[in-house]
Length: 323
Image (cartoon, rainbow, N blue to C red; front, side, top):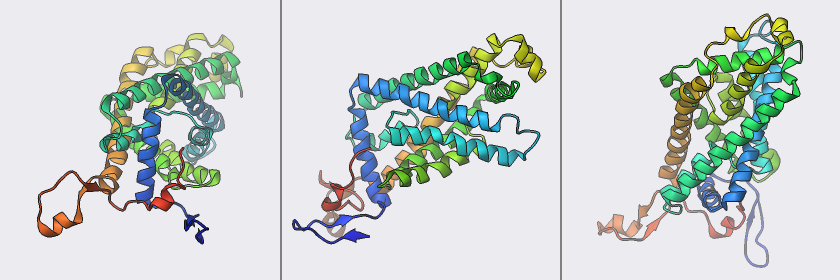
């Protein structure tokens, strides 16, 4: 759908953007993110860590106590649908998420962002995400919310974290790859959107899918596992009585297992899944430099002039805006 040209001869498009246009938008946003000042970058990263943690809070609370009442697949679906709140808050509310920022690699591959800027963004955002998620875990522990429902919320948190820290390195790495492929696809789909509703609708299916499938998200784990560690270390005796277990029933739930057995391989996997399987692939398809058509026809020697595949019309480029 489009509006006829105005007095300046510019046609205004209202349709969702096509993949070639989405790629240019991703590149444009990547440049903007990479050049964000460090203070704003860090604060927005803290917010993103907290937002993802809030999605985890919602998810854990909804599925608590459901194991004996609902089929496994339905429980995972509910967990995924509710967890999608986290990325909705990040995208619509505006925040810097490490896993989503893996797509900055598209601007880097086009040489519009240098390697130092790319790595600085990833480092600052990763630390900020950790601070936001960890602070939210601490607040949730202090709130005593894990004791709700006679301890079923805390029991769900402990079971989730125990399973995560018990993964082998290769399994955690692979689950991390698959996870961020879906997360970055969710972000990628939002580049086609023009309204908040379209962004939300684009986010939910990929995020629900990765949670339902049991894939591993490094930033979410910065909330899930520390919360369980806080519960294991300081939960009152009444809590353990209510759930019929003790702290000794979670032997793998330690800070070492969290950082080495889970966070390290999952983070590496997330980078591979997001930057390589999504960002690099879409850059290669839509943004890689191509020789001038005349050189292909004449067999001439390539020179410095390149064109993008399916370049976005200039009139439409002004309508893209920034996220």
